[in-house]
Picture 1 (spheres, rainbow, N blue to C red):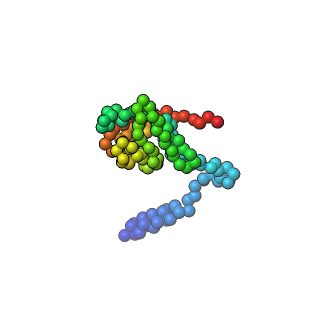
Picture 2: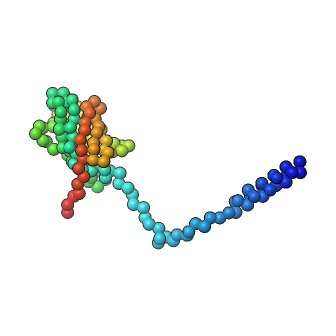
Length: 145
């Protein structure tokens, strides 16, 4: 019994001394602290998109060129008319959970649909109206002053 009490006393002594242990962390003055810049999560979505939408009724493959820009804190999308008129009017552009959503109004059908675009490097995949697959590329560009 005495051995158990002695062992318990030693364990308590050594464990209680652990609370007084200090680390040698270097002190940093306020002038030495670098400010962490906020990461712009929208940067990878800014650019020129060359997109092909597959299986569109009455069209087949729809080829689009979209320009996504940032104006202040707001994203803007413009759809260029190529060889065929797209008939899409952009309503809103937003990013949710690392996915680019572009809401558009389809003139020919009178409905609102959205592009759901995933960007991985310069490769683009996603869906139009949750049913038509799309693929393409994105070209990053820098505005010239």
